[in-house]
Image (cartoon, rainbow, N blue to C red; front, side, top):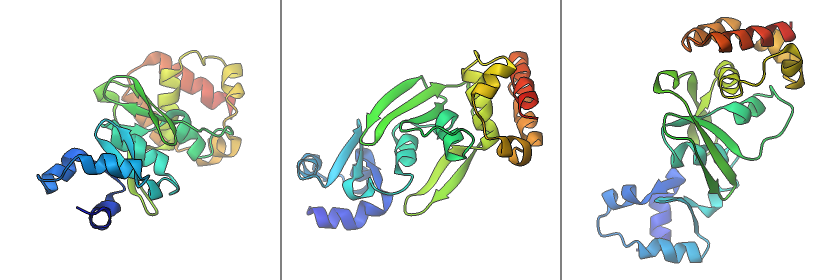
Length: 204
């Protein structure tokens, strides 16, 4: 099979798994992938996952990669807080929450970190559509905050919360407090409830 034929058929997927390719064409030769990697046409992501090299410049592609190579997962924590403009720092690596074990992997665009959460707490994300790359699972702003304080329990005092430098406009005008507390109730975690109350008080 020529690379051009493969590209025309599979490029819309951006990221693909060798098992998907073999399900489409059982006679597909894995050696094609090695040859195309050597020519720079595609890049290997993790194990059986690959990406077309010309897609690496697409805005948001790092989030799609994170979703694909370790599922089920959704982008959350620092990456989501940065994406929504809640924290001022830029975040190069991608932080996600997963129902699987805590892991990290290297991708062509940086590291992908995954924090394991209980399956009953694997909620509060939505599917967001990105131009060119399609659907990506992203925590809502409220769930990103909850996930962050759930995994970073050392933030306890008002001083700690203020030092996070959350965007005051967001905290005072845009944060959906009803949704925040609705999601919080599903954690059934008194210590997290206390941290969230401290956070709200710190930005009131």
